[in-house]
Length: 246
Image (cartoon, rainbow, N blue to C red; front, side, top):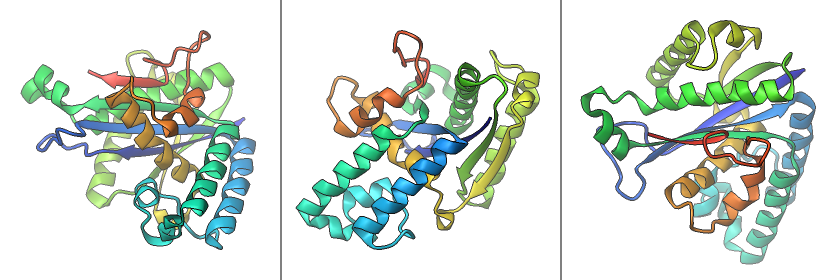
């Protein structure tokens, strides 16, 4: 069976500057079966038509929260309430798994100093590893396409190098032969491509970060997606579908 894994991020992965209020870099992905992806694409397109009169609007977490661009209509509080109800229902009813990794840059530098590696490379390593665990729990014979949003030529080259390194060497718990059996295909896309899977990945990244920063603080957007996080048989997702490093 064919699966699709969409990756997005929130926060700055650089180590030269750390925002004391948001010291995290979070990379997260959502894993869909081919059929489940088609269903959620139809629902998201219908939601866009209902609230924005166009399927061409690209859902973007920050712009939605700030009511910017096409989302200025959400200054209408009744419309905003209805929009969030429909969006949350869609995210809850869709069939997918979430895998996310957060790097606390302050703790990372404290622990490793000058040996601290790029948070993007570290988080990608853990995300791909856990994606394989999750995929094997669903279908050991499945293959997967991985889609990422382009971030600029220099950044894409660096990210491709990280991906190739993982594929060539494997990870601590997933050898390269196991990776190759999944026929991992990587593809960069831009926002203009209007991929629903990438938009969902964007929508879930910030709630995951908020939870990792303040796990005891209630946050509705996280509660909406919490049950989608890859977990063990008892429902534990810490260290499984959601990892904080170091």
